[in-house]
Length: 107
Image 1: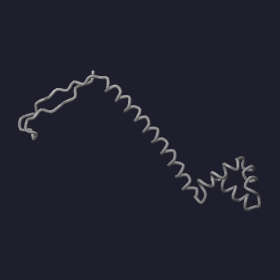
Image 2: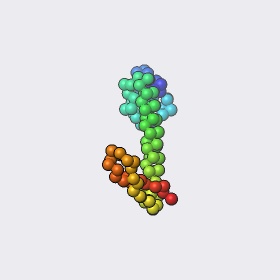
Image 3: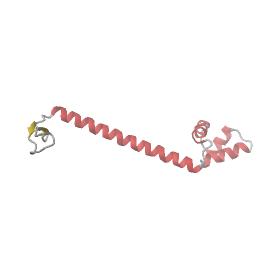
Image 4: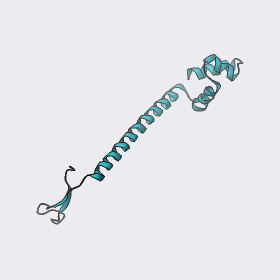
């Protein structure tokens, strides 16, 4: 944001966009991208925007990791035998004493 503000000052002083970018040590394309992304945004809003982008990237990585783990567990479960046996409910169960299915430990 400081460089963008400085670029605005240089342009107001009569320099071209390319000259201002060269003086700041960035390319004209970088200056264009900054204006597109941060133009008209105050410093606090720009900081908040940057933090949100970082948080979004972190959350995307966490989601990708969780999806990979879920896929790995699916592959393991697909190949593992599952022992399913009916169990008897306690007397007076609200399900009328019908058996329920319980998935036993996957060995």
